[in-house]
Image (tube, rainbow, N blue to C red; front, side, top):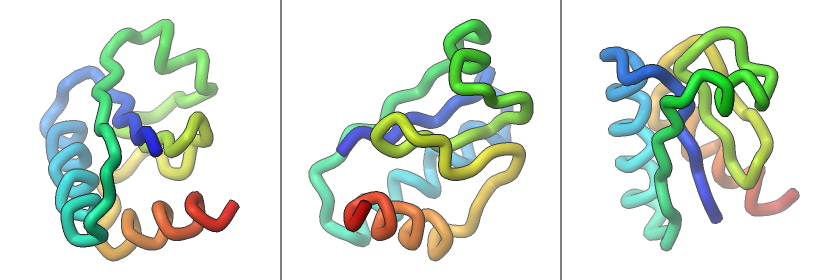
Length: 81
């Protein structure tokens, strides 16, 4: 599983990356968290508002910092998809 955090490096982007890392650790997953800061790459996902989270190439959140419980739910849904 690959999880990307899309954003330009703002505080909310950093918070989102930290929340995602905490969720992965809590779930005991072997997943990579990749930061994508390149604007054309972010736009290629159709994301207009950052931070955004992409799990296995599917945008699951954008424009906000989700709670850890919400990220855990996003990951679980992606695992069953």
